[in-house]
Image (tube, rainbow, N blue to C red; front, side, top):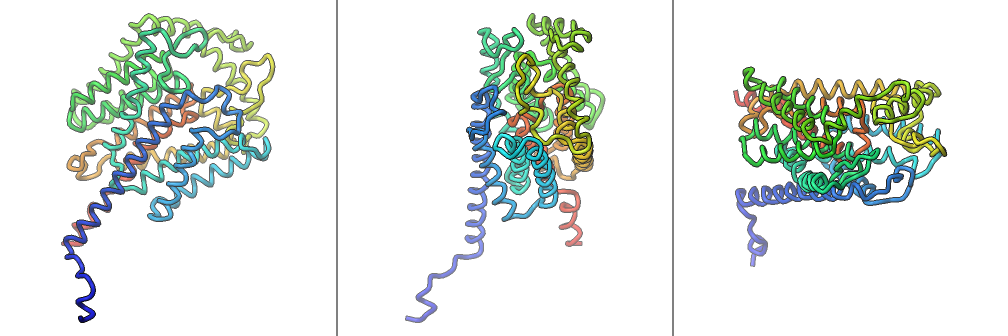
Length: 436
């Protein structure tokens, strides 16, 4: 028997190509299932952590998921090497100000906690960006809808049964989230994504119903910050949508309907009336009667902290892990303003770098608004959706802990980076140029 006959014949090229395609499809499906499962578990267990978990160095489920994201992202980055420079810069920024926190508070797992959490958000972005073609924009929005569906139903059940979380004497729906405000911002992102799917990707009735579900769940949280953020997102979406005035008017009308629905509920109207009674004098003395009083006094107490280290700040997480002071109900509580928080934690240097990164991100999304062939690939107007989410996060950050809530960060990063991973104009034009 000859040597050539003893070896099996190689499969034809078409069969080898089919095998590669099948393997790629399996890896893509596996990655999507991994993201969906981990995000679903993370959202459904968000309210299981104790209120003072930020003051603990113990490893819990949320920390385990964060570490899992970091490990998977590291493997993908080493294998595919996409987005290496921005990843290195982002991680370097986080490491520097985590080191500042260690120098301020000492080395401990509690001190490292915030740095690791924010690295996990970067890790999710790396996973999505290095999986080009796997996590498309429609898939990313579907994942947000999937993980938000059960919490939204629970939030409405809490509203109907007068249960939920007691915040300042008010029972507010929180779904499965650690706080009603955190739930509200997640529902705002899910509602905006669902509306985008309805208007710009097929007008499926299910997307319209999900938009209504997430908007109703947001109203159930009684979060004014979340309401304002959603309104800002829908108005921005209407303004940025290409087309006639009639096309732009739709999202704005929906925003108006949501505001009216919030005001029409007795609880929503009472909350607006209560917050409008804010007294600057009582806020100055720390005698907070409303959440706005509370915020104003908290911001005032943080300014001396910033002045102690105005250039480089106190380090990541130091505003939320400060020691409790007997008789001071403001100590150790989140600032409810991300601009002030990052200013105190990273100083002017870190804050300016952060604003520069947000500016670069926004400009990149603006440039991608005219990607050719987007309608054919099912991503029509996708950069507008990403810009809308950025606008919502920036608005919500004025009076909330937007980026301290991991599920909100994961949802925002999932959609925004899926847009950034779209093939750019040069990549689409290159094949045509080579064939001419």
